[in-house]
Length: 134
Image (tube, rainbow, N blue to C red; front, side, top):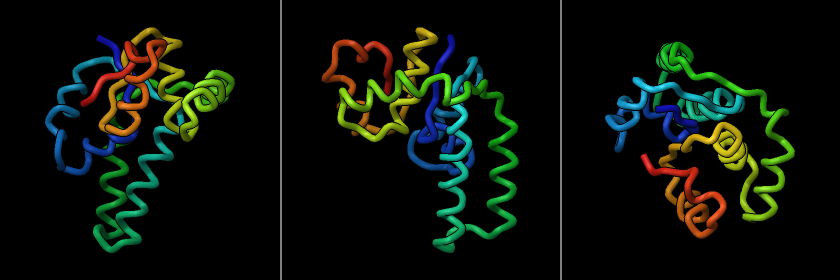
């Protein structure tokens, strides 16, 4: 099965935490994401460094490990118009909407561990079929 994954899933591949095992299981599938996936994951790593949770060496190693995961990326510019429409409809930050726009484009489920976004999407019949919780 093919899936769109967001950064809340991807970061679990390098930070053992709740639902990491479920995130690892997705690695046996074809995975897709907008190209901003990498920037969002990098932001989590830099935040961990800034807060003193990880050393520079640990951040670099986790970034290297994460970049080795075969995630097929789509340029966010290709998704911008649809993501914008979704964000306006949902009154939600556009970053999450890029993932949903890609899931809609590909006709595959988006997997997230963002429970707030999941609840918002479940309230909309149009997109509920495109999102699953990790």
